[in-house]
Length: 360
View 1 (cartoon, rainbow, N blue to C red):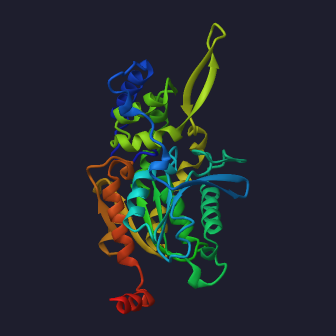
View 2 (tube, rainbow, N blue to C red; view 1 turned 90 degrees about the horizontal axis):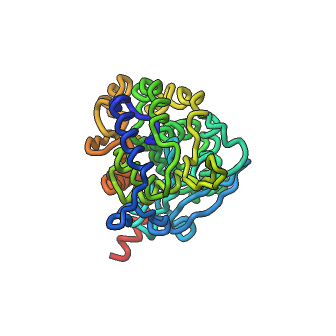
């Protein structure tokens, strides 16, 4: 799913494009010359490790770089929360870009949240905002105990919390709850309360227009690219394999048929959709941290955000060349925006200035 689409998403046109791409994918025709174009890419090319973190009733699959080596380095931690139907790998290219900008000090963390990717456990059907916020807070404070209030303030890392679409709502409410300490910045990617709520009636039709299954991982990747849900083929090759799972069914003759189906069943979560976004604008604007909103176009801004932006309450970054999954379409641009935002809002480190003066 290209997550919950925003206002500029045209249901009729998108549904038609999805149906056309689905028909091509279902053919699953051999591509001897171009098969490698859609071959899956391993996560190891973008993250240093994939760890399992136990929190409550769930084992969270977490992709990370600089997690162990940089615990005492004092540099920033970027924690990414994906949108509905995606996984931590949607931030693979962005995470690599951000981490490689300062690998000796930076940590990047991109978990698969409840009912997504490689995460497993009980109550996976509960995707209510309250549950997702509790999951995120517990996961961050488990991985970085000082940021949960344990230990000294000096041991806390500076956190930049980044959320895409539904994930933006989760991180905004997490920051607003003040249960995570040391939050330097809050970043929302392509999510606005008004346009998100306006788009909700069209989402079931969008989901229904997707193919129910794929003949191979490659055909699933190709469908996402052909339907323009992900414009960057490299990112699609990394992220899409985590959105599907192998399934075996039986045909009319009793023969086993192997295919790939969606990892996350989104329609049962429909009862939670409105709750994800209601009140988001005010929650974001009033959150106790520096704020950055990255959008694909100004048409996504609702009245409350437009007024707050004119008052200088948050930084706005517009990337009209991208689709809804901006972090996948333009990973280097988004990565640079995150790095610049972090540096701009980083408090002065007097000890570091002294150290540099002494060695210069």
